[in-house]
Amino acid sequence: MALIAVSGHPGCRFEELARISALRLGFELLTQSRLRTLTEEEFGADARIPDKAYPSLATSILARLATQHHLVYCAVGGEVQARHFPGMLRVHVVAPENIRIGNLMFDNRLERAAARHLLLELEAADRADRKAKFGKTKATADLFDLVLNAESLTSEQMAELIETAVVSGGLKERGYLSAEAAAQLQFQMRLKLAHYGIVPTGSITLRKKMFAHQSEEIFANLLDFYRIAWEYEPRSFPIQWDRDGSVLESFTPDFYLPEMDLYVELTTMKQSHVTKKNRKVRLLRELYPNFNIQVFYQKDFENLIFKYGLAERQVRV
Amino acid sequence: MSTALLPGLERILFTEEQIDQRIREVGAEISRHYQGKVVKLVGVLKGSVFFLTALARHIEVPLTIDFLGISSFSNKSGAPGVVRIAKDLDDTIEGEDVLLVEDIVDTGFTLRYLLQTLAGRAPNSLAVCTFLDRNSRRIVQVPVDYRCFEIPDRFVVGFGLDYNQLYRNLSYVAVMKPEKSG
Image 1 (spheres, each protein chain N blue to C red):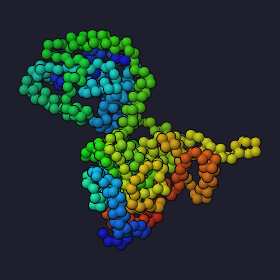
Image 2 (cartoon, rainbow over the protein chains, first blue to last red; image 1 turned 90 degrees about the vertical axis):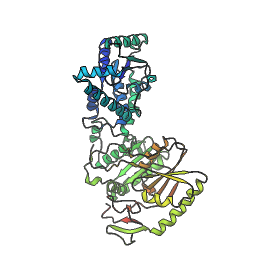
Image 3 (cartoon, chains in turn purple, yellow; image 1 turned 180 degrees about the vertical axis):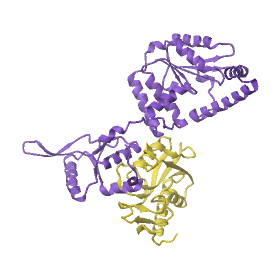
């Protein structure tokens, strides 16, 4: 796949360069505002994205688009994506201060003094943004493949240089990002995003129909909260057979936690039924001694409800 | 703090004197283990604060302290999302001998998350010390290196442990009355 990251000093019109390059090359343009829109579509309009989660979020969106498009990515810190997308072309645009002030005067119809003031503000915002998202206030030249000086080069000339670099590097010939590579990247990024509580909207609504009892739903929520992988009733264990070997009775534990190789059975029913359940668990342990099973009794569950104040809250799924 | 039982409490499980005696013993055990080293006590907010300060006074090797806090599943403002660090450590733990100090370990969910998180920060060693261990409720097996008391499957408060943020300041550990604790 071809991925070009374009960034630059404030007032350098690097956004214009990104747009022209995308047009010339026939690539999809991903700007900061487009990234915001895609984020809202995927994680909901209310999703709060902490600055530290931003790089992972950008990687996740890029990985999704890169399976179907070659991309020009125009955003602060785009160059750091090279660690996930080897071979990407990193472009940075610089220009002397007087040129940048001139651009701001022209683009914003400002007097020179006001444009100078605006440039200082933009530079401060840029530093703060980089620091918050990437831990450093500025990007040094060694992070880029092409550093272009807009003092004497027009945006069209710079776009031509980028096109030359794309052709000589054979970027287009590489094809799009494979589905396997995208899936692997997505897994890593989604895990990181989940650290910040950022999960795709609607991803857990499917569970609503899955559980037979609300306690199971609460337990699944708790496992999700602690990022413990689980499967719901993945396997039935025969525990009684007739003389012909036909299964008379089976036992299906509620949850399986693959990371711990542990089955969990919830028994939130009355004591009279618990005796029956205990018999099943005992049989299971006798017949399948290599399987680990943990029973979570009503008392355990009540303490859990009490500890987390869940009785007062509608469980959301 | 008076040892008279407050309303809502059923009985005292561990008195102030029993707690003090046991913490001295565990402190001595830790001092022996970390002889010649500097140990970093990492307390998990808010419950472990009382235990950590009491424990630190009975550890005889040089030590530093730091705290971290994690988001709560009981956040009533909306769906719980996933656990995350709500208050991170102030300093790095790379190359340090870290002793994670907990108020209580029960299901093991929280401790598992904390150990995974801290282990990824390249400490020299990572061990766990808990004030209370409710082993009967354990779902996830987690290593507990030092424990003051094992407790039965009852809801307890005091010495840092709370119910709705109350009772933390009790100098003893008490069992809550069943009608209140479900």
